[in-house]
Image 1 (cartoon, rainbow, N blue to C red):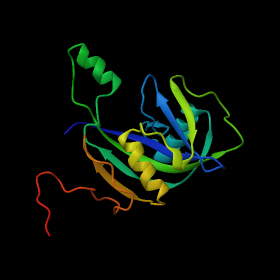
Image 2: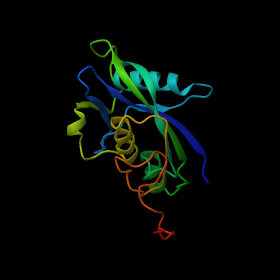
Image 3: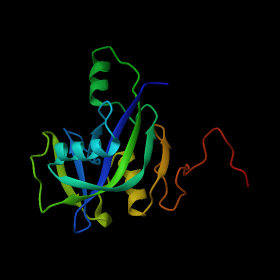
Length: 180
């Protein structure tokens, strides 16, 4: 088991119902805005702080969509890839992401977005195909109106089906035979 990293993200919507997504660096996949919790910081405070820093938008957190646990993350992070290339690879941390539902406050950004985050607004029926696994699962849950979802994901796990009960896997584990 690796160290646990606590993170926050939010499904941010505007008055038109569009969802705010960002792409980091040269990444091709879109993700939810957010970041890591600081020591002794509440998840709600971290979400509002990180979203403002990353996007320039002030947001109001409405509720908790869910907690998304990623075992060893779903792929190496850029620092891990760099460390691996330098011959000093270590285990990737487990990440617990608090995903909130939030809405924008005001008519526009109040600050400049962080460098490296390319922002885009998307209608829920026209989301990009290239989404991170956590983003896809959280958007599925948020757009279905779910709250308080608990999801456990390991690298390669399928994204939960739209109507699947919260906290459940959408397919049986590989080491079990389904009961009929």
